[in-house]
Amino acid sequence: MTNVTPPISLAGSRLGDTRHVCAFFHSDDEEYRVLLPFIKDGFDCGDKAIHVVHPDQHLDHLQRLAASGIDTAAAEERGQFELRRNTDTYLRDGQFDQDRMLEMFEQLASGNAKHGFPRSRIVCRMDWAADSRLFVDDVIEFESRVNDIWHRHDDAVICTYHLAQFAGDAVIDIIRTHPMVIIGGILQRNPFYLPPQQLLPELRERRAKQVSRAAGV
Image (cartoon, rainbow, N blue to C red; front, top):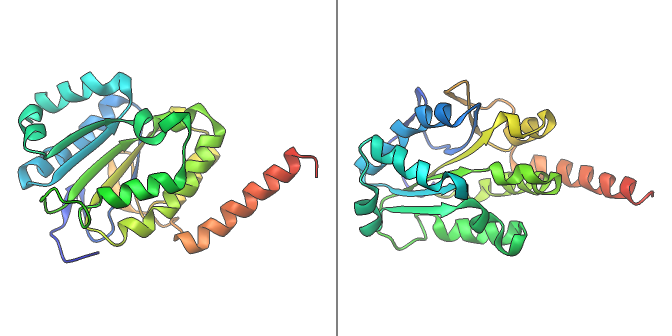
């Protein structure tokens, strides 16, 4: 963390200095019920809002924010609000590149960005990854690696996953990459989290074995 900042209210609890969160939901309605108070509070506190959603969700997202009393047009005009499409953000040229994404998030981090807001609240919808097992494996490794960035910054980062879209083993690995987790609408410190230096060797060894089996070695 770059400095001491006030805690953030989220999902019935408070985020302290650990602010990389995976959030699991069963539906859009559940997701917005849990996250809208956190999102609105961010606008009220003067934090930067960066939301990364599915293209089909774009209009619905804006409508839900407006219904909660957020003037998205005014916030966008003053530079406080950015709404991005997750497919354009994560899958440039149709490919997911971990290093490229790490560089992008490093640039977005409030400690490096020149937008003038005290910190960012970043909400990323991760449903695009469910289209391919290769995407899922890459995302799990990326979610572990990106902790090194968020450990150095004060931003709150929420990665949202809908449970019906991901296999059980993927959900378990996703949980292991985030120090905080929202399950059942409640934020809690994640006892299954492993820091990158512990988890990444395991993930890479597993992937190497999968490649070997696929090659018949």
